[in-house]
Image: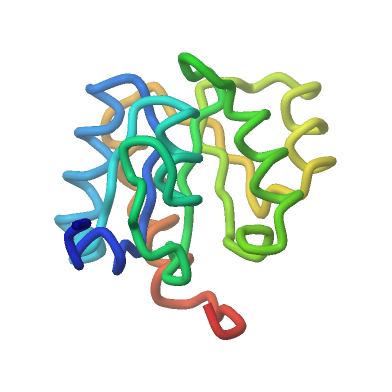
Length: 150
């Protein structure tokens, strides 16, 4: 039986780089925004979590995250493919997805917005700048932004 905590995730972090994930989690915790957070390390795990399949079979999927922070360069299944599947499915298409990536490529931005991403943010390389960006993202998507019945 799945833990009830998995059914109340507010932030789904999809990030394969442990250092970036730890910094993101630490920053959100520092701002009191990571109480109900889930970190998965590849695109397959992200889809399994959201659709209640694979390792997350049995998870109640009617409870969806308030925001997904999605890296583009992931093992097993790319962030673009994860985004494509999320935005194509009525169950997940309204979940806000923020691409948080090291990419600054115009082609990546265009592809993401073409698939319906809600925001595209290039990760700052500098530690303090990274923390500021993640803090602002968390504040906006968890406290300011309003979602329809999600």
